[in-house]
Amino acid sequence: MSKASLELGGGNWAAKDGKLLGYAVGDTSGKYVPREFDFTRGGDLAATRVNEDGLIEKYRENLLLQSNNFGETWQPLSTSVASNQAGYDGTNDAWLLSITGGTSDQRIYQDVSYNGIHTFSVFAKKNDSNWLSLRIGNAVNKWYDLENGELGNSTIDTAYIDASIEDYGNGWWRCSLTFTDSYTTSTRIYPAEGDLDVTQTSGSIYIQDAQVEYGLVATDYLESGATTGKAGILENLPRIDYTGGSASLLLEPQRANLVPFSEYLTFEGRTTITYNHDTSPEGFKNSTRFSNTTETGAHRTHTEAFNLAEGETYTASLFAKKGTLKKISFRLLASNESSYGDDGVTGIGFNEAIFDLNDGSISGDTTGASMVDYGNGWYRCIMTDSVDEVVTDARMYVYFRADDGTKSYTGATSENMEIYGVQVEAGSYATSYIPTYGVSATRNNESTDTLHSLSSFTWFFEISRLGFSDDMTGAALTLRTSAGVEHIRCHFDAPSQQIRIRDAINGYVNIGDPISVTADTYVKVCVVGDGSAIKTFANGTQSGSSYTIVTPHDIGRVYMNEKGFNCRQLLVFPTALTDSECIALTTL
Image 1 (tube, rainbow, N blue to C red):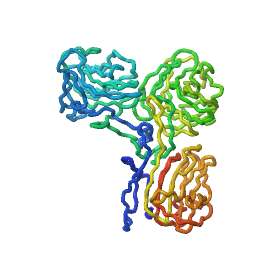
Image 2: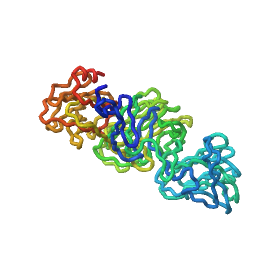
Image 3: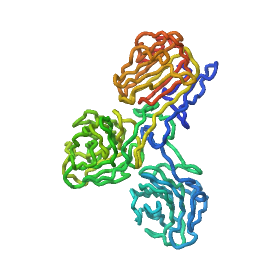
Image 4: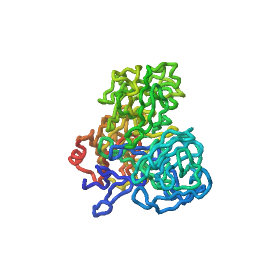
């Protein structure tokens, strides 16, 4: 690779602050210097990746301001705060929250706007008071026993989902409250003398590191100040993905998860629900356990309603982990399921395979069905099919089947299974997980570019297709001038499942023969131009004959579009490599 003037990937992918990081020849000495490439996706909440630990990584944000500066932004009501107290983490960053007067409801608070599922958390330790109360306006509250580490009761629960108290040692507890609703209201912390009791006239507790975030569980603390704290898959951050264990740049077309609550299923159809029961593919304790009742019939749940278009192809997916139950199925049905029965809807036409979470096998109607192993017992179960009519109130129904595959049976309370991350998207394959917290969410498409002017060059890339559908046809990678004019393109042809290299300034003529590809299989391609002719190599052989250039090329940028692929490595050489070098470079 010593001749390359640009190198991306090859096991050394890096990204930071909306930039894709690579290396390029900086001067005539031939030394490499770091190079930053602008990357565009936009949006925060919808994009995820599989990180180097094999876990799904999301965007995270602490929506509170001054999350550990309770003397700023936070408003006192008959309370005062004192800083520089010994904290749970060995620092002196904790605060003493003391009651200064009044006879009830003494607190500190700040106003936050909420829409959908959120979790409010704070680290706390008893002092003169043994209890803490957390409250979100008039929607939900909860009491926490800081002496015994136990949950208390609540007086308001219209938006309540879950609560927890977690031991952090030395008398410190992380107290969290999960809720859902849409409002702008006060986020409150109360010292308390007892369960359901905020009538004290004095008392104090220690507090540290408050956080409000999207989702069902309190994740690692993010410090905020005058602006919110952010981490994970940020806006415009390139997604270096480790699905399968090796790093690649993930570029996908725009997709929307139509399911409003992807991790919060509320319907108990001969089942009972336990939220935040086990560790999900994120690595946090935010999967949901479904346990059967003793009733006879289909044991199931379903999502909230969404719309489907006639003639459109959809891909439905979810993550599941076996408990005492090992088999699961799902399909898209109209909301009024009783009109059709448990076994399907005439006219919608969505298949229903049976996924075995014990051995990763699929039975039943397997057309369009697949499974992906995410480790630790988790599988992503996937079904693709078309819809035969407009449905304005569709839901994804999920069935917990008996070991013999039976859908309708007499259940037992000992029968259970874990669920996480439900997704329904328009398209013929499943893209990376798009979390939703109350409304459908859209992950935007992605692109990047930049180089220096070249007339003789070798362009090498190693990529795999994610699937084949109409929205994946078009230019995926292109070589452009410094001004952005497209000169050579790597064109994805989804219907024929081919890659075509085309001369964009000489009538989009094919360079060499089309290169056949299959989904999720890597192909190595070289495009070589010497100023008078150009040719391509793929997987160790030349692809077709050389093509004579009419209008010379002036390469100044590499541009990546969102046509659904992983890029493991990309190189640009400021010279035309020999045939033997290209064959060696592209040999699998």
